[in-house]
Image (cartoon, rainbow, N blue to C red; front, side, top):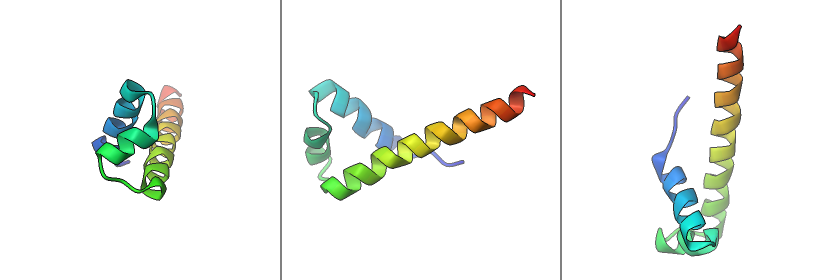
Length: 57
């Protein structure tokens, strides 16, 4: 499992500013790239939950 901290920085900056698009603009990301990065975070979260569930048994 790989994890890109830039994706997390985008999410945190979006929460700080109150707008993910504004955070993406600060990172000079296209709307498509912003969407891809948010989807990657969601995928990482799902994978982490799956690994934790398997390890619990």
